[in-house]
Image 1 (spheres, rainbow, N blue to C red):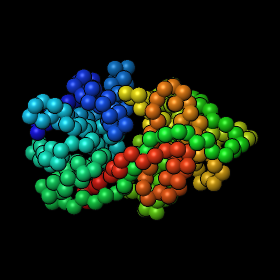
Image 2: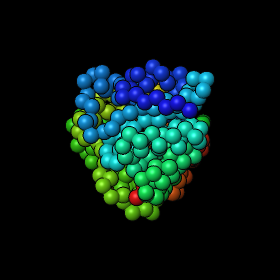
Image 3: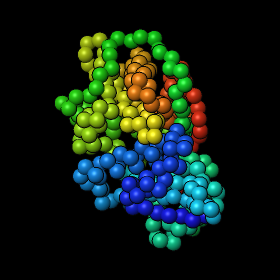
Length: 296
């Protein structure tokens, strides 16, 4: 296996674009994040100096791409993200990072690659990796519209950006609570006002407002990458849960994305029975299980 690292999203996409496009569903996170960063940086959005950005292509002896990954997460511990790759390549990623002195105590992505990489990093660094979250990738089949609820889906306005930032940053803690986990220390959310305003400008963030015109729920979505759009985050404040707002909003956003010709996917936390039940009732079907791991 040969590992080739890139420090620019455009260079990575030039090399790996066809590979990502061959299975855009499994590759959705790397494809969408990399495409967004290429656009943002070209438009002058500053590169975060704290993030150890890199992109990875794995090739076999014939030069064929057999795996990929990236490190671009915007908040500590800046987890890398690994796509499926041969077992030996996943171990080699860990060894190369260790040899260069780069410490990556967290990783997300495809199994078994992410587990093998973190096991080897833990062995080299003297730590023990643990799974912090089991995730599941779903793709929408035939959309099943839920029972109607009062209100409507609408785009978030610029004047509501502060509220949207608070709700996006509350999403992770709410997901931990619903999954029966203790909130992860240091995970305060990564959304800021500037990034939210970009979402709003790109028309990628929505509120569900109730019958009285009050926002009661937020759903976001990534711009399609290689024909696949990923929904998330999906957040309902505790005071408004249990009324069907999440089902209504996700269904409406999904219908909008389907109307644009995109395949629609999302991730769930396997420990969260509420979200898994809601999404499957809408017609989402499981595709692959993945995991987030931390060395501690």
